[in-house]
Image 1 (spheres, each protein chain N blue to C red):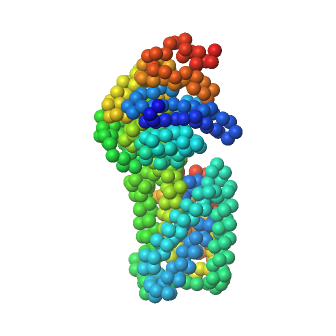
Image 2 (cartoon, chains in turn brown, orange):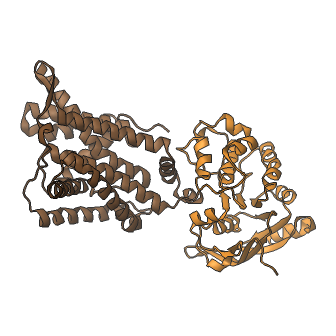
Image 3 (tube, helix red, strand yellow):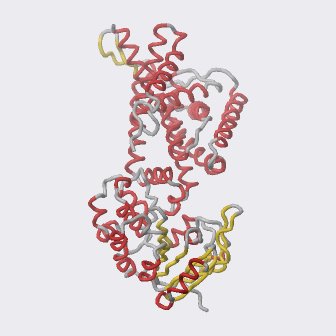
Length: 288
Length: 234
């Protein structure tokens, strides 16, 4: 029994990480109908930037976030303003193709620079610290920190989106880009800010991923799939739904892995397909 | 002729290969109400969209306060003090009524219009400030759209078909509030299908026909015959 509770608790905790993969993805889709195929690779890029920062400056990776987050946000702004804005229009295909190209470039660029060797970020004592809950169940400090950060990030996004002038600009531009311009909003700037925010979240997700598990230049696409699945399970346009989607995915993967280590991915995908079959609009669709 | 407040000079406008405006010229003096009338497809909305900076145009074709502004971009035109109330209201559906007003004022242009003043002008909106904009009736949505435009404290406000799809009593109610907008020294260009409404509300009228100015003059000086001739091209 405690074994299963343990599986579920660990699944929930990793679900927070998946929700963070998903949050940035759904944010930019919501604002500018852009499907970012390079999202997973940008997560890996953030992990490598953290690796370089942590090793050259001798920082703890968690502290390195102070540098990685602004760097990724700036990259997001520039990427959107000078490249991706040009692909936006009535056709969904061109941004899709351009971000696919970007994904290839990032993967191969990282391969050239860092080789295909697996890397890992060392976060020190926090990695092995645990909190015993009851007999047989203990929660790792690191997964707990990750989950807490995920909840804080989602809550922060919710606040920005619904309580600030920036969020108002995001929603207005998403509703009607032409009329948003009449309000004095420069769409190109608003979109670039959206991508900056998305990549700031990617930076946090990338660092947390890299502390938790080994990474190499090729693992991006799988993180993209987890992100997509969490978004779809939770329902497009709902941030808390995305968190639940991530948790469901994490738990399903945990249960699968517990039955047979080879079933981890399969169980996650099955849970996703099941939700898609039963509730195609997701568990918490946005109510208009 | 001295330069007017808004000077449209030989403006052409295109949708792809289709030309919607052919050498349209128009003058709006500070504080004036100008009506633009014409049949469907005459180019009225295109004219307003061009002034607002949403259409490509020769910069010199539109001069506002002595500055060439033709061709936009629209967000800069708004910052210069021109606000458009678009046809069909086009409120932001995922924003509440109050958020729609707030976003209208997000540039922070100084002037007399504040949230409180807009609510004073349209008390109905104050009662419904927290509702989603989609929950408003057509007339209330039109008020919100006008309020949203006022929030940018414009020097010139462009109203596109504000009576479209509204009950006559609601239209009268909205037009009855025009003077309190005018009192702040704002110039207004209204596009109307309803000729009588347009003539009574305005000082000056332009009639468009197939993208050209067919008739222009002081509202009181135009005869019914001249207007119908210009309107229908008969």
